[in-house]
Length: 193
Ligand code: APR
Image (cartoon, rainbow, N blue to C red; front, side, top):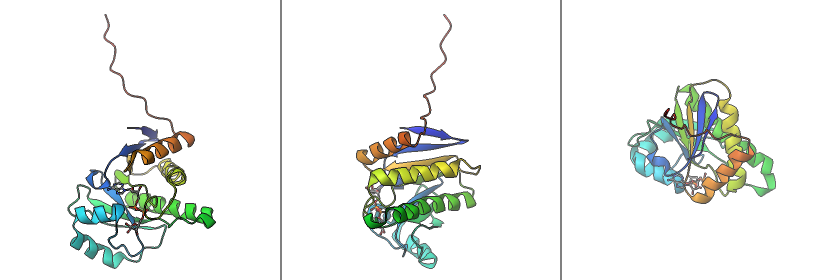
């Protein structure tokens, strides 16, 4: 599991299921209506409890693309859900797509910090139904997280939870390209003979 120290915090990349995360918050790859959907969104609504989560989301909608809203986690292990709206990928507007994707990550991190949270787990926003190429999305995501964590705040752990090996590989490559240095494994002290 790659782990990259950034100031007093760490960024982790893992392969897994977002709904199983025990971080203070998990992030939903949401839509502007904050309504149930497929992919990550469908899994989160099912695991949190559809009726209670839909009732909590209704008064917070609409949430513009690039922004985020917070609700309780209800039946999830995580206490909070941060609903982030990433963009539908537009090849004709690469810079606009990247700015909105960065906004979705930054807004989520700001909401987490405003609530004094120490740990948050993200899925790969926009790279499923919204069609954002994972090679491009991963560098936007990691660059935004890295920049946010360099300023002091409550967050100590940001985890990217990737559903498939190809996504984990893309994020690992993006971390290296961004210049993030992996934490070295702590070796047990040698015994003196
Ligand atoms: N845990 C982690 N990652 C997951 C999970 C899961 N349980 N399920 C799917 N993924 C992965 C997908 O493989 C993809 O790489 O999350 C990434 C994002 O995929 P989507 O959930 O399709 O999110 P997105 O592309 O942002 O589309 C959002 O889809 O479900 C609707 O309401 C949602 O309209 C919104 C749109």
